[in-house]
Image 1 (spheres, one colour):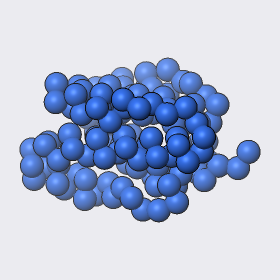
Image 2 (image 1 turned 120 degrees about the horizontal axis):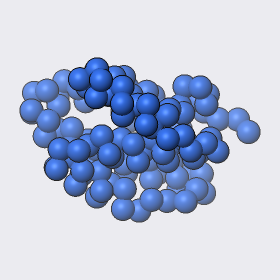
Image 3 (image 1 turned 180 degrees about the vertical axis):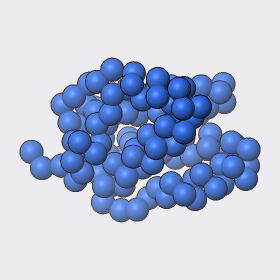
Length: 125
């Protein structure tokens, strides 16, 4: 099977990513999100997500933009699922927004990563 981005670049261990995000006080979380943006852009075949603009607007709005963006990002995850005849996680956008509103957006990142991992036939935790 040919993938738009290699498994090595796209697949991440979810538990390790969460632990590294906490141990590095969120710095690894930014790297993790950057990699997720690259992966989804490759699967979409277009530059839909710009990490640096996301980071800038999130900082300017004190995180409000990040919550909106979780919705937008999850919608494009669903788009990739539909386009590739994969199981669609219909409630993903709503769940990601709710996790963001409750200050646990990392749960949404983990859910999105689990979906990405499954595209490669892997479910790492």
